Image (cartoon, rainbow, N blue to C red):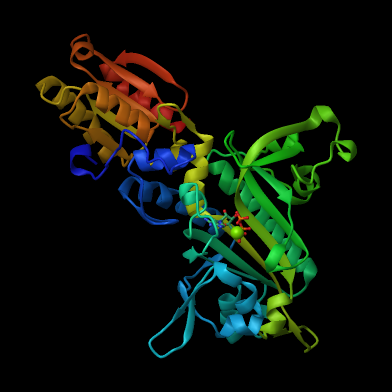
Length: 431
Ligand code: ATP
Ligand code: MG
């Protein structure tokens, strides 16, 4: 992508209503534009990151055998009346009446719809277990939409639903998701802390919340330091679930079960939540299957959510400095930026294009900053949008056969020889 052809409207200042750093940086770097309270347009740069996050989430779900489908955003109220949640959900649910007077709603979650799909097609224990998911926009009319995409009214969520013959099998499905969640967040460069949670209005008996560490997070977490150094290739959900972790209002230092030297205290942001709720919805919505003995029994269900759009903000909260965003490579909108400080100079233009063409050919996500603007603006815009690896081409350096290379994540700046730029960048991309 050439910057001059792209649509990347950066701003010097954030609007005053943006309170937290991720909200400010997302607006300043031209990732989102608010359309009304808690509802945003995703501009090209924001959409690229959202898609990268979605891709990691999808890959980790598919790896553990979850099957993707797509349910609509608008649902009929009928199933919600049957489940008893049409009244319970209250004002958070956006209710709509269609032209024939039918009561519809913009889905805040999908337990009802998926249970109905399941019960229409599955009748036998032989078809279990099943785990279905989609990545779809949700709407919740939050009392206080704030913090940009972190608490929006319209937001993108990945939600799965598991169906099993009994509690024991359901716990296996739960643990599979638990493991997939940890891997998903680690792939995004984050440190996930799993905590035993309340089940709330979804109901049920078992639930975990996944928070990621960020100095600016809203919750204070108290947890066993072992949770900070997980090996994604070797995760034992039962072991992890036995480690101590609590949010501040649950933590009591007088009866904390682990020694003080193992206890860590950090700020976190909730990015995922999983539940096992047994037969709560299957009984009400008649999702029964025949077991081995020919008895009709309600299936045991779980649901599993990841806040895909919230993660964009959460990752920025975890990775930024006073100049802007510092994207982890796995989610960065572009991996490499080639910044031509002197687009009017023939040598600089030729060299920039040479590198650009190389990375384009090798399918590395690359942006060439070929804008005619001040050097200061060019450098500060690129710091702001946070591309991990920056190749900076200036007239004076080039005359000496040198190029400046910046690693935005590690705050490394160094001059390297013109001929070594490609190899050096590729090596950094592999790390
Ligand atoms: P919260 O306590 O933050 O309101 P929740 O318990 O209502 O979250 P779930 O219903 O479990 O959330 O939804 C799953 C995930 O969806 C959450 O972990 C979060 O990442 C995301 N999410 C929930 N509400 C919002 C929102 N208003 N804006 C953005 N993401 C959200
Ligand atoms: Mg909520």
